[in-house]
Length: 189
Ligand code: PRP
Image (cartoon, rainbow, N blue to C red; front, top):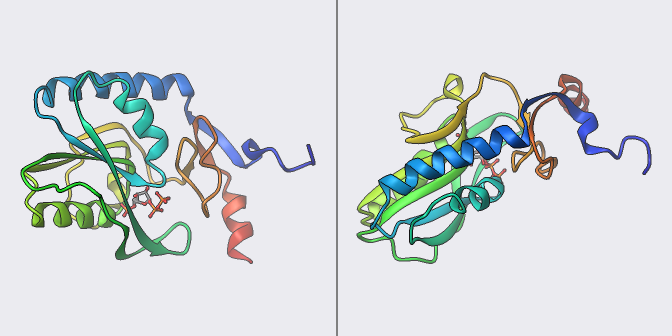
């Protein structure tokens, strides 16, 4: 392997190990199993980041469900959201009368979650709740509720397990804090 190709070189320190994440999935899965029993929820993963979390989460839910995906973009410069959200790929299912559970990797400003919740409620969803792996309330700009989350994080840039920086590093199997110099190096480009 060429020097510098190892993706974990960009990690300052590990925040949540693979074991920590599996514990979170187990705990959340048990809670969701209770709360969604008999409801046949429509579990909607927010592409792309949430895919990694969703696949582990739903395998911890002993509930009959249907799965769908939505892709919305929050434009920004890689680490700051502009607040402008657009719908790139819609859900396929008719959400009218359904109990919808949105699965997110992280809720940061809340613009993305607000957009998805408003859209699904406008279409007549019976309930819309959110399960996020990470919640970053210090950055909140919208009044949204993260009904279920794995952990609350401080205002630091985290990558891995679906979380990206410039669409990279999602495949790191744990969650780590990005080295500040990686951001600085990209700012100067
Ligand atoms: C990330 C993340 C959330 C959103 C949270 O998605 O997956 O969907 O940002 O930020 P917010 O609370 O400030 O809106 P992104 O739009 O970067 O797409 P990705 O999942 O493809 O990385």
